[in-house]
Length: 499
Image (cartoon, rainbow, N blue to C red):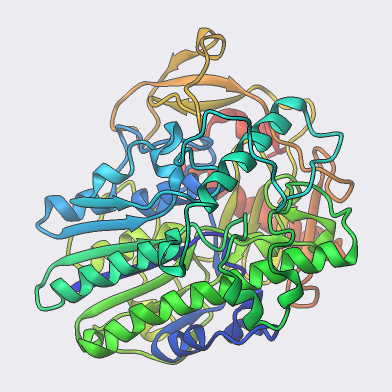
């Protein structure tokens, strides 16, 4: 048995043809849908990038206890478990967060790994001169704090240095990543017991894409224009908005072409007979919907939380079908362990999806998702409840034995306030550090601190009109309580959301 995961970052469900996207032709995503089970109710769990990847390793929610951070000493790691059970595991990726402080323990969990440099503000190409001017982004709004403005200025300058090192399509990080992934398949297709994760940072912003893809979608006048939206409300002109969206779609065309290389390898070597294929993403992205760019600051809208997912399982050989079962990121680790016949650890709360692929078997009634210290969300697939943290909430903590943020270690000031606390049910008997942190309130006026909003996703898929139904709210709150108990949520979480 063999398995391939193709993972994208910030892949928007609504732009793919099998999910109703019509703005751009994506022949390989169409082809993918013909070969796989297409999931219509796939949701994130923990956000953003590294929390989602931690769940692909651990098969359990982590946003209730921890923000962005490494694999913890007590974490079960799916690729490492496979490795210890005789399955060769490999990752090829251009996701530079894996080699920052907050992602430092992920790659060594695999048997071997390869990192392609250059995405976003990756500190790769060198220049001791002044920061390069960035013509591809927009100045951040005045309200953005100066430290964040300085960070983005540095990232933009570094990004321009990186871009100047690409002289052909083949030199882009995504192209290098897929070339290495397909090379592994070609050299090892005849062997058994391996798993490869081919993971690209695209189509995450900045939407840096070879010019030929922009010309392909009939907008050559936008070549070289704005391609890096700010994490902020939409204040741009119609022309600027069109530039951002065009660059995203062009990058999506690049992603589609790369996907085709993997599908070609499946066809060439008839991998459909014995190889699982998973194509997924960590989360979606806002391209102006609800008046916002990107993710994280605003309420947790469907454009970010509802994700595309495709799975082919050679055990059932089911192809070209839709699946309605409610599934999440946490289900991917147990799915792969089950496929290889490896025991699923008790601390993994996700469910293997073999029967769901085969016959749409239900694995859960409710999905829980959100950001650490931010909005708490639950859905049954029809209704969705958003609960914002209270202004007078008790102290929020990061629970960790790996005190690093995205790009830096926890400061001395933070750790001077930390305390060791009793183990949680999943920390393997280890006491952990509780480090005080700040809650995250959704920006804008849609969801106020301490407020609860209910949406009917069937009648209002765009989440434009909250409804009032106390019976449904009570049912979802009760389900939320059960999921918090199942995940051994910290005591302060209950009070923070009036639970």
